[in-house]
Structures are given as structure tokens and as C-alpha cells.
Length: 393
Length: 239
Image 1 (cartoon, rainbow over the protein chains, first blue to last red):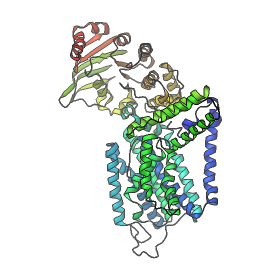
Image 2: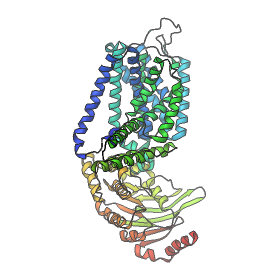
Image 3: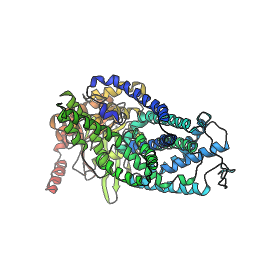
Image 4: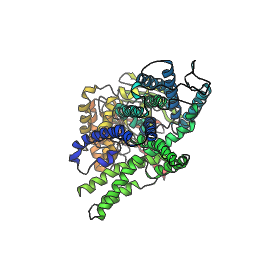
């Protein structure tokens, strides 16, 4: 399920023989969607939403990093906004101080953030659960304070590159091929796609298997010869790397960076949306980014304060933890399928039992996150089975 | 050969293993004892999860206690757990490949070795099936396959038959008996099912309150007065 992700449950099994062509359909759909996002959206929507789209692409990368930590390895970090700030800070400094190509700056920012973020992850080797969350939150707070004190580089001289005058601030430069907002939107989407490819390559190979083992049982992982310390560090390094790249993109997108843009509480919001999006599939990260960046943009354009979102996210997390531990990315397609089946049944189809089974297995509520995770696995596991039963009858 | 001498483990005021000395020569060896006798603690010492207060464990001439836990698995100490620990979200194949790709076995033979281990344990499930979809017996077999894939030298089985119905226990017993010839490993079997232990193990050691109270041919050990008393004594306490 880890590797097959969202589609896992739905795709399975109306007829096993059709698996082969379906394996090709999936990448084709992804490429099609990517083309749609790259070309159709900027042509259809206003610049306001294109800018929101850039933020969605960037925060999808941030959410992806946390998705790996929480969903793959089971490490809860509340320091991701600080890691993002570090990436942006490093990138801004490099963009002002050097004439390196933007792509090289992205890479270097990712690598430097990987080292710094790895340090944030060090406590993870000894701690887990609430303690790890608390420690990373504290570290994030410390980093935020440090960055606010030394100021973000805004084009001035010196190490921190701070320019005291609030007028005539130089903008952070963008890559030559992506000067306009629309071009930078496409640029960000492409790098977000690359980040997903990088993470998927990890999740579907040796580190992904090791992470799955660690998440379920550290002793089982050790007994299989897995160096759990190294793989946890690896997860933090990967998450920090992609978050660093996202920070660099953010520097290019916003062009003016202020430490006020990176609040410690953003880390909590990121965790909340990542949980809501779904942590058992990397695609949940896209849902998370839409929740975090597109929703506020929509609300603002409708003249509603986006502060309401905090309440909405609170309710949303509660909803996800109690009824859909695999997140919206799993729940929405499942509910749509269930609705479809219900409609077909109304139309006279004979597949009632399957529907009943599926809803029974997914409807179990459970209050604690740990139990919820097990439930989710049970639920995602049960769904294809009952569908198979339905399909063959 | 595994040689254990004067192995003592202390948790605060409790001494789950008290100067245990025993040799496991070859083949499948039993390790039995009432609940709380220290069997699982002994396995945890061998796997590196518990650090003994004193004592030595050498396996095939290597000082096991000096190795980091995950390195012991790579060197060849494999185990199954009392509560089965097959990784639910991975496929059968990936579960077994997991141990192989972190062992010293060459990656060129991985596919062959993994499928070999899966068929060795008699698992008929699709290797690509997700383990979370399997029943209790098949998950157990996945765990056993993970323990025997590649080149294990020591295979520790912690109550593998717990919760399985009789005919499945019989199948598991056949598999356990064949492990030494399949991979040249020494197998140590902990179980409360005496018919499983006596059918699989030619020799058996008995622990009671952390002490070794008997060891030798399984049939003799099961008739040993001390052993009978240890089991009946515990029963009497329970009632």
C-alpha cells in the first residue's frame, strides 16, 4: 500500500487481468495532469491564482518532506517551517552574493539545508512521538528567533546582507527563463514534480522498505539487519533537502523575504494539513498544499478572513483522525466510489454486499492516532478485498 | 556452535537470566520453560536488544555481544517474534527481501533466494500480495521466511506456533525441522507446545526463573524431575 499509494485501493481489482494496461495508464494520467497544471491553468485563471499556484507547488514540496517523516517513518517533526526558512535564507544569501545559476542555488540550498535539518533531526535518533515533536518545535522556535535577530538578507552588504532602509530594497533574482510570475509558476511546478520523483524513488526502493519496517516495529527492523539510526537520519536528510529546495523556490517566488513570514506556528499548520491530506500516500502532500495555500487565497478573494482556516483545520484534523486516518486523498475517492456504487445499486445493480462491507470496514472510528493508523491499514486493506468479492460475484 | 557462559541479565531488582551456561551444538534445539523463565530475554540478548550484566556468548567463534544489534542480523542472527512482526504494508516479497538486502548475501541472487525462502516455508500466497491482507498462518510463514532467507547462522524462533491451530502447527513443525539443512543454521525454538518441541528438537534446554535447570536429549529432559516440577509448580501457583 505504501508504494501503490492512493490508487491502491481503488485500482485493484475489479478484474486482476487488467492490471498490466492499468500500470501504464497511471503514469499517462500523471503526465496528462502535469501538462494540464503547467499549461492550462495559467491560461485559464488570473495572475492572483497563478501566484497561489506557485505557493501550492512550493508547499507541496514542504508537505512532501513531512509526509515522508510522519507517514513513511513515523517521526513527527514540528520544525518544518524553520527548515523551510533556513532553505530560503541560504538561497537568498547565495542569490545576492553570487551569480550562480538559479538551479545550482536550488541544489546547494537543498544540500546545506539537508545538513542543518539533519541536526534538527538528531534528537529523532533517541526520541519519538510527543518528545520528538516537542524538541523539534523548540528547535524551530529557536531557529525562527535566530533568523529574526540576524535578519533575513534583503540585498545589503555583509554576512546577513541586511539593508536597513525599507525603501529601495533589491528583489531576489529569479532564473533567466522564469522572470514572470507565470513562468516562475511553471518553474516551481517542474521542481515540485522532480521532488516527487525523488521521494517516490526512495519510497519504492530500499529506503522505503526499511522505513516501512521501522514504522511498524523498530525491533523487527533491527532483527532484519536494518541500521535504523542511519535510515532515520536518511529520512530527515531527504525531508530537509526537499524542504531546502522549496525554501529556495520560495525566495524566488516572493522576491522579498522577511523573518515574519516564517512563524513557528506554521510548522503546526503544516503538520495539520499533512495529516488531513493523508500521510500514507505521497499524493496527500498535494492535497495538503492545496489546503494550506489555495484555500486562503480563495477565502481572501471572497473577502473572508483566512484566520477561519485555523478553526477549519482543527476540525479537519479531528475528522481525519477519527474517520479517515489515511486522509482526504484516500477518503474522497473512496466516498465517491461508494456514492457511485450506491447510485448503481439504486439503478438495479446486484452488488450490495460489497458496498456494505466497505463502509463497515472504513467507518470504524478511533480516537488515538496510533490506533487510527492501524485502523487505516485495516481499512485500506479491507477495501480491495471486499471489492474483489463484489467483483467476482 | 553457540556457547553461552555465565550469562546474567538484571532489570533493576529482577534477574531474568541468572548465570546461564549452555551450548547449542547444531540442528534444531529446543528452549523451554514456564512463563517468565527468561527465554525471550535470552533471545533479546542474542539479538542485541538487551545488554547482559555479565557473561559471554560466542557463536561460531565470534563474540556476539561485541557486535551492534543490526550487525548481528547481517552477520546471521535472525529471529521471529512472539507477537508476529511481518511488515503489514509491504508485500510478501518485500518482507523477505528486506532481510536479504541487509545481509551479506549477494544481491545478484536476491530474487532467487527470496522466492526460494518463500517456497521453502510453503507459502502459497502471491509474493506480491500485501502482508496486511494475509491470515495469521501466512504472516507467521512470512516471518519465518524472512528469518531463513540468505545465509542465516542462528535462527531464533520465539513461540512461532502461538495461536495457530493444530494442523498449521504441524506444517510449521515440518518447516522448522528442515531449516538446518536448508541453511546450515542452528535453530533455537522456544515454544510451549511440547509436541512441537519434541517433534522438532533432538536436544532441549530448560530454563526456570532465569536458571538452566536441565539440558540434553529432548525425551530425557521432558521426563526430568526438575522440569516436571517447574511446570507443575507454576501451574499450582497459577491456580
